[in-house]
Length: 332
Image (cartoon, rainbow, N blue to C red; front, side, top):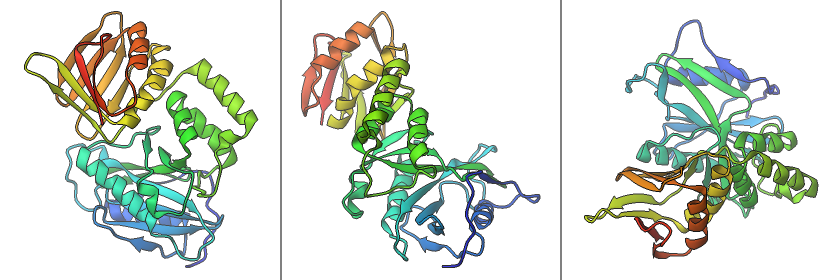
């Protein structure tokens, strides 16, 4: 591994005088940030590759190639290249060899994007406990997606792209992100960890009583800014008689009461988004259900939402509830 200079927190962007293809443009940006380094490269099938650089503050920096258009323009949007982003991940490690599992993690996340067409938006969260199985035992079981603190954006011949960093969270930190405001929580996390490096040995920052008390007060005051909940199971169907069926995972149902509480109380809708369908819950005075198999909207009053969250258990089963008889909930 070659030597490098200390990357600064001032974010690096790349807009060359001659607009380059995506592959070259990304490479030139990374060579600015990590001069004289030859990256470690991993390939697993979904992405063209994942490149890894050694940061002087004892962590590995993983960057994907393949969610944007690396060579020729294939999409119709002239402004953005491909999905408009590449992923990054930072892993604290004193090892002289870059572990391979973060590259596989990023490749699997990219596969999800290609399979579903769902972009990772800034502030989105996801349970990745199964994807972390290749790592050492850790409390980091979830992820939040945010701007890479150093890599900003790249202008290419195929459009612009940004770098979205996958940041590891503990289970209680994930719950706080979903019930508060992701960007505010990232500010709290960043005060302790400016580059948002994944430390597999760390405890939750909420284990500090003072931090936990400040965050709890802010959650109550501000409500949640998370407009969507990404889940691995969400499908919608309509029976011939007109009734609707929503199929959700147990984990999704477990999160619904908190989303209703911290979104509806502030008059904000939210959506549950799965690989093939989404369900949007919208505050309103009258109960209405509308949509199609790929997208459904349920309008509820705060009172009905409160009753529904009390009546729908986070347990596998099929439920038709008196408070919302138009919908059969299948929890798996």
